[in-house]
Length: 114
Length: 109
Image (cartoon, rainbow over all chains, first blue to last red; front, side, top):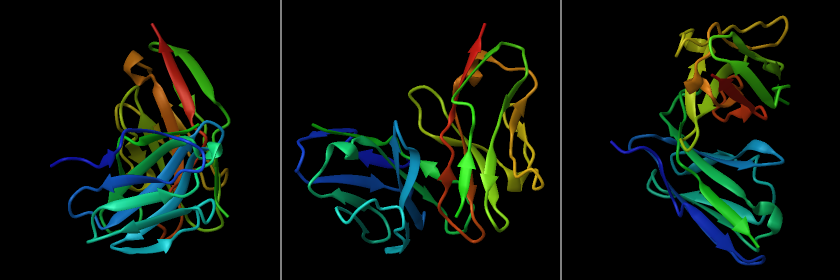
């Protein structure tokens, strides 16, 4: 089957606009993660879903960031009123339901905020 | 709080030479440690994890709880090992990964 997919692959937006990033996990994976990869900060955890619930949102940097997951599958990360510091590669990963299982990563969405 | 430190941003070695990537961690419980790798224009992928005690592509990593380290080693580097390597930690019964800053390895012919 296909791996984790993300769309769009690239997104350029103007400061102040809202953006939505999409993640399609591997079929059957109950756990889904969002990470952010930026030059200054490395790879940072944002949020984790188990099914449609998000037990850990501790990495979301501000209330401009939100995410949801529907049907235990697709997830959307929304950034409102984007700022230049939001520019980064946003990575999605999925894994089967146990802690410490291998996480399978998507190709990422490169977000550029002008 | 949990933290992963990779002190080397860049590492350059010659083909056939040994390579060691350092990783130190800070965590109060019993962590699970991983190495993830990102080859050029490819996705981030798991290289190895402590729990499985495997040797992948000739790489090994030993968890040293006394020194809180999980260094990655390979006795004879190959050009195809050139990549970005991330050390990561997952806490007890935790799902998320905390990553180090990464080490870019270049293997020269």
